[in-house]
Amino acid sequence: MRQALVIGNWKMNGSLQQSSELLHTIDSAINDKISAEIGVCVPFVYIDLARRVLGSSKLKTGAQTLSEFKSGAYTGEVSADMLTEFDCHWVLVGHSERRQLFSEKNAALVLKVIAAQKAGLTPVYCVGETEAEYKAGDRFKVIDGQLQGLLTNKEVDLKMLVLAYEPVWAIGTGMTASPEDAQEVHAFIRELIKNKAESTADKIRILYGGSVNANNAASLFVQQDIDGGLIGGASLDAKAFISICQKA
Ligand code: PEP
Image 1 (cartoon, rainbow, N blue to C red):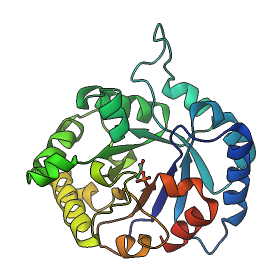
Image 2: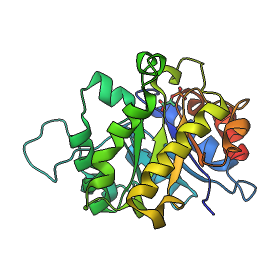
Image 3: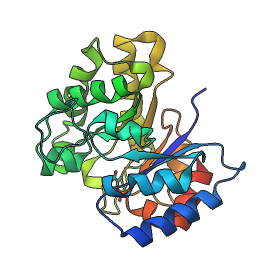
Image 4: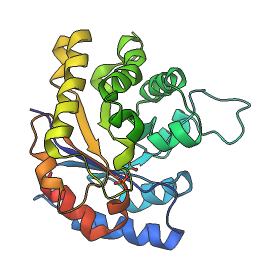
């Protein structure tokens, strides 16, 4: 049985005050009625704030990316060890905005996953096709390509990994994959894992992301292979985010 997981991705939004208020509001709304695991990936500069506000809360802090390098002359980068020093638990790897806007490639993303795991972080590795790829009927091929390097690398610990399927055309657009469509891709991803690691395939959580909101969350989360959500826009609205967490 896989425990449901909901992770908010704040992207580059908010101010110190807004972040503090949002963390306090979400944290105080999380109670025993929410059985899902919950995380929030905040901008680097608010990670220490999250650590201080959340303490030992059920709501765990995450980062939105990390460096594949351990330390050294990498101006602007943040290492996995630095993140764990601030009690980070999750880290997103290969979000489509990182792939598209910052040219992050699969090979480097696998190194980021390994760096994260070595430091004790749980990476959330994101995959998904663009609209053009979807229309061309290439989504399975694209997702396969994004996952192969990860699934075949012996240094990757599949037991310490979360995957997220996020169709690029659904991110921040208000267009969501239908539950059936998303389920088909999630089942495909689980099958790919099964081919490499039969015993872990049923244990890995695969999140869906792409315009999830309080109204459509339940119909997505009820699908057999959808184990929760990666939530962008709606995670900046405490009421909507809590409602999504309750549905998981
Ligand atoms: C995301 O950025 O991971 C995301 C899913 O965004 P949104 O929920 O806004 O589509």
